[in-house]
Length: 283
Image (cartoon, rainbow, N blue to C red; front, side, top):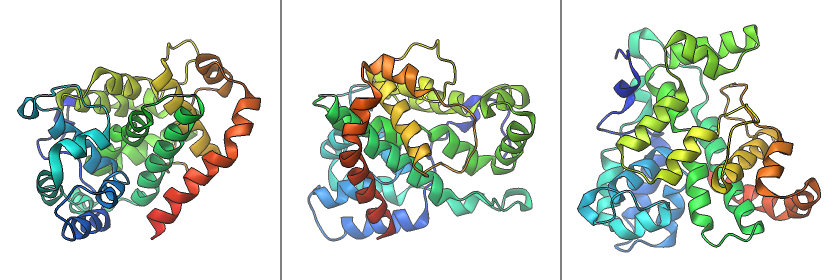
């Protein structure tokens, strides 16, 4: 599969997922005819399937084009029948790993865990900050790295080469990608969610969450996801793809109007949120 421009990554079939994730969700769907909490729990641990669910819910077919920012809202709108069809048509990640005789040593489960931990932290931080729609923050955290998933699936060898160059040349992965491809994993993610008709606030998060420049403007949603990503990395839940792009906490505290002392008070609850995600993933 050859890619020469960013639009080549916007595939009709969506992003591939891990086979274990697909089987788990299908198993839950087979046990009930209602869109219950257990099914939603399984979907929210898979950024690839979550993105497809959001894509479907934001299509004109359901009358809410580009207005559904929450995975919970999307799942409730679609119902179990549509969710089952989405899962059944989700490509399996492993089918892409032997392209051109190349088997990727990337730990995809680590990438998936980073995304879900970031989502849980974003939701927890939003609650601590007094936001009522914490599900939107969760969703934004869950899909913030879909551009990386796309590269990891379709161009794993190029991605690994970029990671190695970024480390050896002490540059950000984004700068290496721009030099090598002419576009970045951020561009891929943004173009994907734009093509899928997702709301502007989610598109904004994908534009901002891999910035390393303190002068970049951030809103509350992007700021929370950036801080969640920062915490996930510092707590040992890196995505396994070194990118060198991480806004400093001082900048994020300024955007969110909080202090280090505030964060310290929130840590027990945030760690509890992360523990629940890790236990669910291991189960």
